[in-house]
Image (cartoon, rainbow, N blue to C red; front, side, top):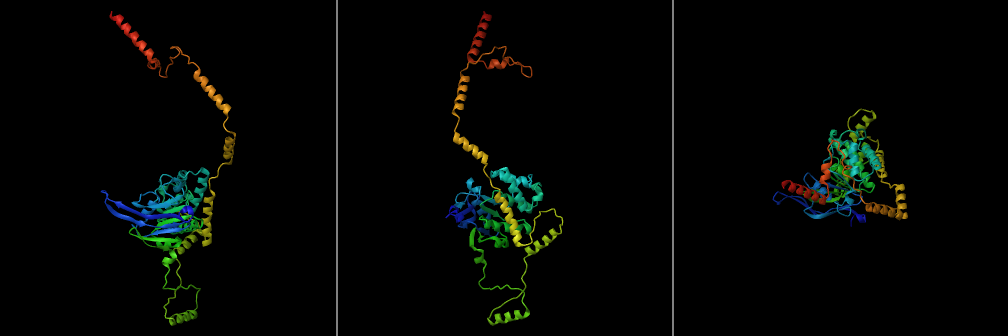
Length: 406
């Protein structure tokens, strides 16, 4: 089954990459017999330490690296096919951007590469700059951006073509907690809209929140694969979450658990540091404290945050290329009427008359125009004379020479 059947967007069959030395001897097995299947509308995570083969896999899927053996099918075909690559958005581990272009020019450049017209490009650029928090720095050169800000514009360029498949290599690398939270919200919302996301990361907490399915790699091999729930669920523990309990209720629970031979620990739940950090920044924004960095609106609730991301994606999807109705009507009328045969015949008749007309020979005096520097074109005329005339001049010179010798 492939993406054409609506089930798998990515399939690999014994995909292997071996890097050889200068003499062609195998040195590093980066990826070894990889067999994965990424379903449509799924967030799939490639997890593992540095050097486990994650980036190599992404490059082979994109056609940037040729596999030593095996095969990869992306969106039902070969990712080198322009019709397929046009449906893929890619964020590399390092954002290679033109430092002398500003943010708006960068997105406009990538929009042109995908063949988007100016109206669509402008609508999508405005939406993406707003999404990544760089709307106020749209005219600032990329070379002056920090790593995190360059990462944001890199994500925007990966979404400029409204891709069906989004491939992200370390998407939250270099981002602050606010940017990280927004990227995770965006990935979740993209999956809800039918997009497929393949991401590579070594930040496990980020992948845990957004991935439906993960493959944990080590040494180029998949060590474990499955859904996040089935891999992380602990069978030997039971977790109960309630409101604040009284001392009497806690004592009763303790007696029940001890009577059943179990162990338990009671402590207040901890807020995630990310949530605490975002709360502090939100308060600073409400007080309108100045900043020279990226500015992201932080919504008060999760529902508002998701709604903001959804609004940006709505604007991106709305910016579609619509055919010009007047152009279509004119083309239809031309096809229906057919070519004007009378006009074509008149043009052909005029062309034949011009060809048949004799060319008038002008006198040598009339063909002596002066050039701008005052030099006559006699020499050019002599050089361009017909071959028979040149031969006559040679004979004339020869006869004159013979008479002189006599």
